Image (cartoon, rainbow, N blue to C red; front, top):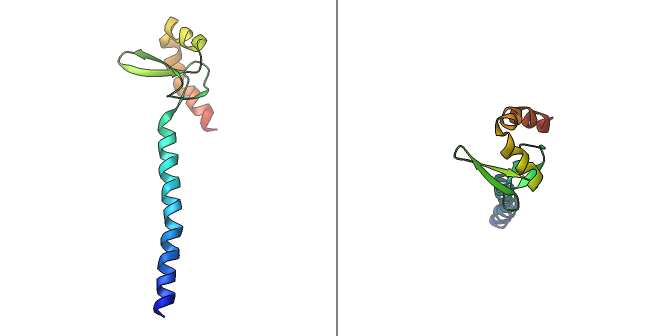
Length: 89
């Protein structure tokens, strides 16, 4: 009986550890991905072009998108909610 109980505990722990690690890596990767406000593309913050506007950082997939944002940031900030809603669908 003790052997069975020990085996159940060991297998239970072994089953829990990979699930815990997968949840942690997913959470970490979600923090590094954001939306380009101009084209709506998902971009990795580590590799994207970063601009600051009114004290907030914005990330872009290309210089072309970053330049478009620089020219008229208000336009793209208004469209931000629209792009995020489309990505959820």
